[in-house]
Amino acid sequence: MSMPTIVQAGLHGLTKKRVVVPAAVLAAGAGLWPSGAFALPRPSWNPGPPWAPVDPKAAEMHMISNLFWIMLVLSAIIFIGVTGVLIYIIMRNSARPGDTEPPRQIYGSRPIEITWTAIPFVILVVAFGFTVKYIHDINTPPVGSHPLDVIARGHQWWWEFDYPTLNITTANEVHVPANVPLHFHVESADVIHSFWVPQLQRQVDANPGQDNAVFAEMDTPGIYGGDCYEYCGDAHAWMKFRMVVQPRAAFNAWAAHMKGPAVKPTSGLAAAGEKIFMSHTCVECHTIDMKGSKASGTAAPNLTHLASRWTIGAGAARMTLGDAMGWVHQPSHFKPGVLMPGYPLLSKHDTKALAAYLMSLK
Ligand code: CUA
View 1 (cartoon, rainbow, N blue to C red):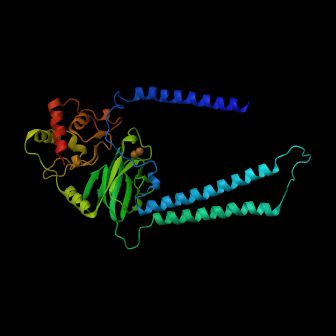
View 2: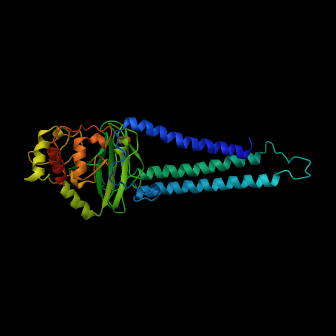
View 3: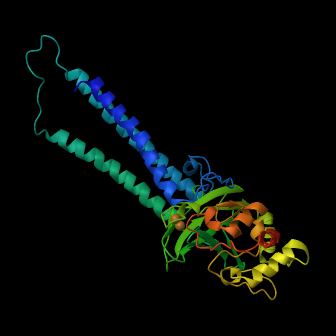
């Protein structure tokens, strides 16, 4: 096969694949997901730029990104070196018109054997040394620091965030103070998940019955995307969360608000909605911290300050009255596979009242 024919065959194969694969995926998807699930307006979720891991916002991520650059430069030197020598040798030793003898052949040269064993050995020792140093450094909290403990517990399919020292439990949105050492305890309530905020630290598996430590100190206030990075079942893709890094005073204000109880609505739709919430199975799975509250379930997100959060359903629906109504009616419409049952038998009025109550939980 001549060169152009091979290239053409390759291109032909590619175009064929590009057309066939998405069509097959779409065809499979059409059967698996309720229609409309793809076209829903979704909350905006900013996972950070594609280069987020090399745009670190925490001291530990700076180390990981340094290691990346060191490895990249090392690899570039090797690539350029090897390619350069190869091109030089090809050009120098190519047969020329009029050559009668082949180039000089070298067999069993001890200096050459030693050189091309020693150079890779030294390169690997350097790479190994940097890797071990950085692995050690990112997993060691600064001596004498008193990190803020945050438990990040993966559930199918949402994240629970507990602050044991602050007595706060929330979900799908983790607030942390800037320039304060953090100690995340990554756990799981069911299957293996993976906790990752690309600009915070490395990915860490969330294993049932295990407390995996992540140390980090965020240096720039802002909002950073996080997600589950280990396939964990149907709604794995809707296990997003965001990390809000705040100056100390703003974080303290947030924490004080989160510690407070839910405000009981006294009139209007929201008050009617509260009665519906408290008399249905909602209370079996969700908690609403409030004097005399019947809702103390822990299987699903704590809703005490739900409406202060960014989304419903770990990124699946927007925090709006309309989406809350749709969610209560049929959550699987937004999040196929979600474990929460819908309440399609509630009247439209009751659904709206329930949603109004949820939206009042600021
Ligand atoms: Cu949890 Cu993927």
